Image 1 (spheres, rainbow over the protein chains, first blue to last red):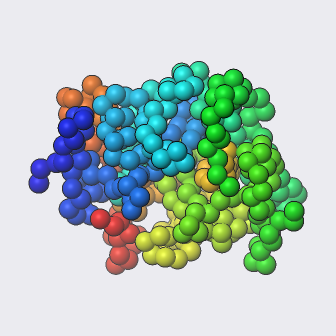
Image 2 (image 1 turned 120 degrees about the vertical axis):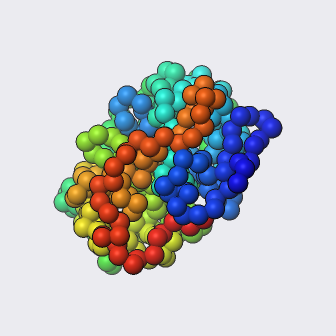
Image 3 (image 1 turned 90 degrees about the vertical axis):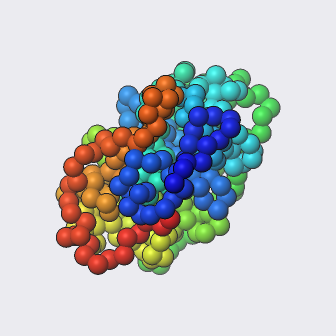
Length: 165
Length: 165
């Protein structure tokens, strides 16, 4: 079957025809969920550290594929989100991978300014959660990053915080 | 405010009171979505490779915290899922982290048998997606893992494939 081609980019997505095609094939046939998005795991191309977890809609995936820079769909702001457009911390994609059932994307990136988290840290995962025996002694989160890379007030000014309770 | 304690485990989750508490605090206050789950990124503790992307409900998170082994909520099977219960490929948690707004978990694991994907590969992300200029030459997925670690038929027998189209 012919792939679906988007007029805005060179990206083409194939329809999902069979489990074998999706799992064992060479056709990109991503699954967008009922909200039209696919989850994305973004890691540092050098250290392997998980930097953030976000979502792409079809347009964000197409733009990421076409430009080699990370675009996401901001669920809190409900808009296409070129990472770094405000902060300057653009993510350059070293490699994109897709998982077995093609319902998740992994990006390996090199980030301008080495900052990825709106709170000011290198990674969004700046706190560790004690597990098992360590948890019995103390269940408090442990800060892995103890110093912010940038001051969010300077970078974002009055832009509303995207975190929702 | 007092944390919510579960009778089944020692895990305690705090109510989400403020952005500052969630982002800058030491209280574990995870956000489960409208389906009652939180996304989880699982990476190899040694190589940093992303192995899989899954979900936990409250019970799965509590059990993972209490036992140090990875439990998930299977959305396709709608049941608690102790990874490795069928295959023997149990994931031992080296570290758990949580992100800025506490709506995603990162597990660093050591997996018995070094296999994590139901298709038979080490990682679920066994295929690369060409990006940018590389994509213009050839948009086909590239297999990063070219040999399966195990034979799914031998390990799973007649268990239905969890992949949904």
